[in-house]
Image (tube, rainbow, N blue to C red):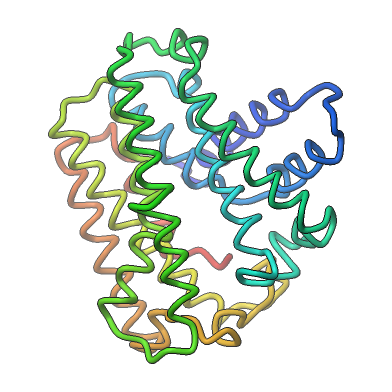
Length: 299
């Protein structure tokens, strides 16, 4: 399997949904332009692709889950818009382009993020998209999915991780705090992307747990790689300012362990993730290849 083609094809489905979702004239135009600007600025679409790949493990067609997968990208994009604000990471570049607040101003950037987060949950709760799922998912499952996503995006995940990240700047790194930040800020949303793919396919609970463990492992690995390439790659390759973590004295794996030990940790996490997929046989091959692909990424 050509994993780059697989990722490109699934990301293409998500991109098409995003483009169609915001078609037409909406007022105030600047707000919708701001949301479109960040949603269509590029990006790996890792979370929606993982959601689709997880759904396909159970014999379902990936096209059916694209709205839910795209809603995850809405949430991810909201978090990037807010992270880039002067009050947070104060970044000028994202995905090789000026950050949202640099183009539209801070107030509109904040509202664009708010709009994307809220709209994501409107998608998750829509009866229209639920009707397209061939596995006949119940309202109870949809409610559980919404609960899981809200937990991972909020005070049990991304929000609390971001808060600890900010509060830990300029402090001596320690392993428990570092693990808390990375697990919550990044790994939780990657984990839930995988687990809800299984949930929306009506997978057995044991399978959801295995895929959740896979997601936790690759989520943490993804963030450690992000820490490494922030040091080793150029601004042009990264699409954001090189060395921003070091300048803000953020708590990262390289700052605590160095680059070589951080790379060893990534390899260990990827191996652990792949072991979680043994139960699923060949149907989980895209997930295995995505895990290995994360080892090679440069941006």
